[in-house]
Amino acid sequence: MKPEQLQKIFSVLDFFGLNSILGILTFAGFCYFLVKRFVLRKAPVPSSAFETVPRELFQKCVTLLKKQEKRTYEAYTVPEEILSGLRENMQDEVYLKKLLCSICAHLGIDGSFIKLIVQDSMAEDRAGEITTDLAFTTIRLEMKPHYTLDAVIAVLAHEAIHLHLYYTGIQLKDTWENEILTDTAAVYCGFGEYIYKGYAVMRGEFAFSYRKVGYIRQEDVQYIQRLIGEE
Image 1 (tube, rainbow, N blue to C red):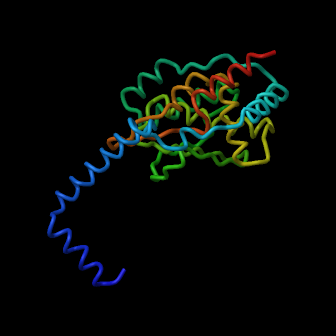
Image 2 (image 1 turned 135 degrees about the vertical axis):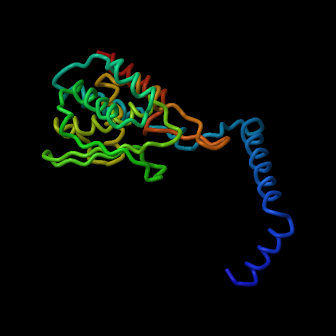
Image 3 (image 1 turned 180 degrees about the horizontal axis):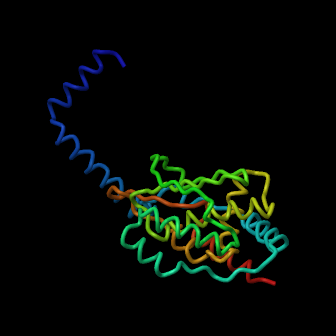
């Protein structure tokens, strides 16, 4: 941008005043929200919340899990002691590690050797990450301001399932399909309730901003549960 163009911009800012401009932008954003919500009939949520996964992929994932899983799983429930601690302080790393260990125990994994790192890199498209080479495993939990406790449980369950699938050798070659397999396996292994609640669309930290965790939608969780129930 040329110096004279910058000077013109600053002149406009000086003429109207910063507060006035911010007020205009806020009003314009509110008008956009009203038009989008009530005229265009579109919910003010991220497009990722409406991305659809082909039903055939869910069927493929459930068929693979039914064939290769060596056991059946009861529904997982977070122990009350851990829930109470996290309700008091959701960023308490001691209780977050206890939660991770509890989730891993449900899968038959010793979670005590896993290093849990709680951070916020401001990466909007990432909720968690796992790295492992059998000897060393690290899970990074991206703690966002808008997270609910159910979202945190769902994220840790997703990352623990990655490890479970790694150990059992259950995977798909395509990276995105493998993430869908992971979410499907989380439901299959008993975390369906927490995935359903944790993957709900959440209000963000700003007015009319929304966020979503996970690769699948709540209706997908219900569809997976129906597939699992089929003989």
